[in-house]
Length: 260
Ligand SMILES: [Zn+2]
Image 1: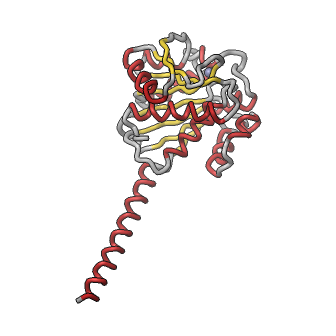
Image 2 (image 1 turned 90 degrees about the horizontal axis):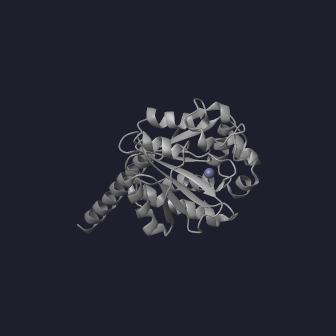
Image 3 (image 1 turned 90 degrees about the vertical axis):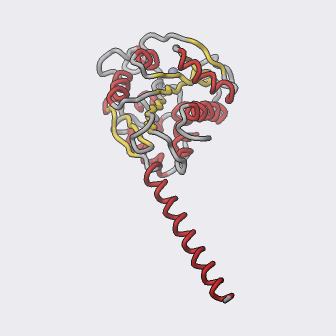
């Protein structure tokens, strides 16, 4: 009798471990293998030439693979199955703000193993060319002031967002004079409540701002609620990257995409 009981417990244990294996595999396959496309071939570049990127970017196989893709153009990763709320996270619009892309790369590795309630599109380097050169301007103009110019990098990102029914955008930047705990720009009432949620948790500041020609303002006027997330670019350490990452995580949590 005792032997039978032991055999049953043993079999039950096997059954449990098999079923948990399957559920883990299912999660990984359905939510955590991002698909990737090339978005804009005009802006291709070698981002590793940026000494800050080279110093702080973890040299994982995933990142090495990404670096090679960026030599062909900017890329968009998609996490999740394409349904539910659709969110676009964009970093690297200004090539001399490497804190943003580095934070987004950390966020992407954070997403692995997480259940995503919706779909997250990520552009880690909007203009690889200027990141490689560590310059703000692209072909002599500020790319985040020319969103309405057809064929400009920001214009292509806006068109991508509209074509893919994106509901929300987080545009990730760094700037001089930003408070050490970070800053979020908003314009409308929804964006303000989104930013306020993050402020309460990440202890960052929030500010109303109109920036004509920016991705945020253009997307917001097309009914895609958008916030700009900023850190101080004078910090050349992991501090700025983790400050940015924290704000991205709370911004995602507010939208119900995941629990952090
Ligand atoms: Zn910027």
